[in-house]
Every structure is written in C-alpha cells, then in structure tokens.
Image (cartoon, rainbow, N blue to C red; front, side, top):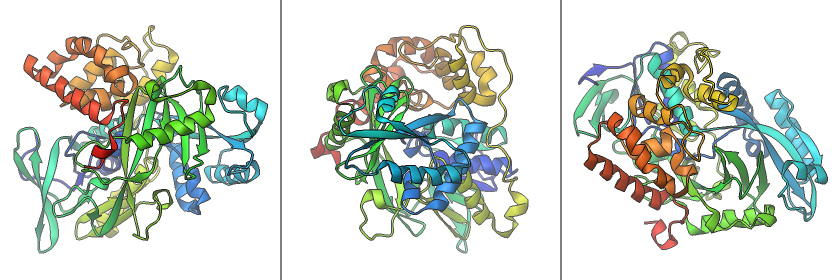
Length: 521
C-alpha cells in the first residue's frame, strides 16, 4: 500500500521503458523512488514498438552519427547483459537494379556503422547466395544483398524486467494510478496528487523531483498530448501486421525502402510468427484509446510483401493480428514528413519538474541518467550510481528442467532474470498450445506482476493475444481454469473481463483493419 503523504526523492510518471529505466537508475542509486502509470505497465508505445534494439542505421544515413553511436553502445550492453531477452538478429537488405540504395553506397554506410559499433557484422551476398538466406525473396532485378546485425526483443517484457530490477532496489511501482495534480509551493514542485484507478482513492505524495516520462500522452495536469513542458510533441503512428510463420518463413529480418515513400519496412521472425512493419504517419486519434491500424496502412504493408515475396501470395486473409504504436516525436513544426522528423530525445527541467520527449527503446538507460542528472542538479555525480553499473542483476544458476529446450531456457532466463526460481516453482512448465509461452508464465504473472485486466495478461505479460488466431479465443476455457482463482475473480468478473478483452482485441489488434471512416474519430 502507498500511504498518504509518503516522501520520495523522485516520482516518475509513466510506466513505459523510459519511466522504467528512470526508476531503475534512481532506485539503484539509493534514491527513494515511486513510479506511477495511469494504464498498465508498457501499455503505450513500449508494448507496441517494432521490437528492435538497434543503432539506428537510418539515423546515421540522415547525418545523426551521435545518436547512432550512443544507440550502438547501448545495443551491445543490452545484448551482453540480457541474452534471451535482447538477442542479435541478422538483417538483410536486398539490392535491386535501379532502386536506392545501391550495394556500394550501403556497404559504405555499413562500414561506418560497424566502426561506431566496434564490431564487424557486415558482408555482401551475391544474388544466388541471397536466396539461401531468404528463399522466397523476389529475384527480379536482384543484384545481391547486404547483411548486418542488430538486436530484437519483446519490448513489454523488457519493461517488466527493468521494473523488477527497480523494485529489487526498493522502488514502488504502481499501474492504474494516475497523476492528477502536481503539488507546488512558490513555483517549485513539492509532490504529486494521485488517483487510484481501481478504487478512486486519492493519495498525495511528497517529492521535490517529478519526472514526466509519459511520451506522446502528455499525462500531466494542465498539459495536452501535443504540448508538454514547452516541448511540441508530434504523435506518429507505426503499424504492424503479424503473419503465420509458415505463410512467410523468414529466419532473419529482411528490410527494404518502400518504393512509394522511401521509408524502411521489414519482415522479421518473432515468437513463432513473422512481423511485417512499419508505417509512419500522423496520429490524430484520442490518445486515451489504443491506436489501431487503418485499412490504408494494411494495404501499404501488403503491397511491399507482394513485391518482396511474390511467390508467397500474402493477403489480408493471412493476417493473424495487428498492432499500432504511437511515437512521441519532438517536432520543430516546419512541416517535415513524418519519416524525416528527428528521433533524438529532448529533456527540459523547470523547478523540480523534468519532462522527457522523444527517444528510442534502445537508449532508455542513457535517457534515464540524463533526466536524473538534470533533475538532481550539481550534486548528481555524487548521487547517481556508476555509469558502468549493470541494468540487470545476474540470473541465478539453477538447473534446467529436463522438459525445456535450451532455446526455451535461454528465453526464460532473459525474460525473468532473478525471478526465474519463483517462476520455476509454478506448476505446469509446459507450453501453451501454439506458442512458446508456458502455462507457468501465466500463473506467475497473475501472482507477481500486477495483472489487473485480462488484456494485461494476454497482450503484455505474455503476447498470446498477438500470436494466436482470434487473440487466443480458443484458449479462454483453459485460461480460466489456470488463472481465475489465482486472480481472485468471481465468475461475473471473469465474463466482464472476457467481454472487455474481446471488444478491445477486435477494435485495436484484430486482423480486420479499422475502417478509415471511423479511424480518426
């Protein structure tokens, strides 16, 4: 329980990867830390990103080497610290006659990329060798392909793992808790007034430092979703299609520039499926609702699939599910196209209130340290823990259950870290049909990971709602058997949650894109 008038050294508003990173660095530095999120942890952008942990090759190409260098350094840290959660993935960029970029130019760019990342991953494949990597690739005009490496993750699980590390160092982390007012005296921040979203209880907490990490959502009293801390936020939507792997079998990420607008799009393997993404366009819907793909976005992605993999005949009927995320991009208001907006983060401080906008999944640790340094002022060097301190604690050495493969064991070690022994205490260390997730992960989440709604469990604690047909509808009877009693839900609560989940899934995650005439309401 969070007591009224509790005192904290820092209060973080926003439970995505940026807020989680701040809570982790603050608590790891011995600061009394509170994180609150008005929805579920990772509810926004941080469960609906493109899952890439990368250095931003496109940012290097657009003349932002500093951003690329920092991201590459963080990419390597995460791959080393959290194998199984953040893993290397080969990328292939096929080159076609008359299409940008050509092989020589792209290999030159990769040379710089490898230099900044201090690791050589690049190579060039002749056309025939390219088909060994991607058998379904279109051969019409194919000159060859460039290979390089970046990283991939489960973004929501990354947030949960970082929050777990923060809690281990004493942070208090609450979902479904809204900041309704910033408390001030003589213009300086003194605390935050909170509202529990489950029982409407109001709680005031004291703190001289409040960090707004709500991204595109604004999230603070007297700020809008477009203005936050004097920063102009341009919400940009990126949407993705999830396809059965057997319909588009790729074992690496395949990326090209879309011929219609020159934006990078890619297909990559993820949790037993193939993901196709992403779009980049202005999002002017109500940010309190889950964003949804539009029919034109789905068509845009299906057209590039038809060009890249013509023999597969991918159509809308193949789509398992969709997701859309909203990027909190800081704009200068000069009318640039969405893809040309700067992706660098911006941080501002004003008498105890620090506001963050922009940024990347990969660089959450650096953003967290910069925000804390700015908020703590001149004494931050004595307060913050060492720059070299690990984000993730070591995983306990426990024996691998004989029924789990080495790949499954690696995933569990990365996903749960020091919580692995508690997970292994759960019964049913067997896979959910059609998925990599174990039944034990579902019951563990219900007990230990602050599950409030069914969508928390199926869309963020696990990704069953994204990778199974109809959002996992066929599993609901078994899910009820495993989880209802653990959650303490009555039969009526269970039915209410199922109805809520079905409606949410149909509107924002289903294979049928949201009609254009309703999409922007």
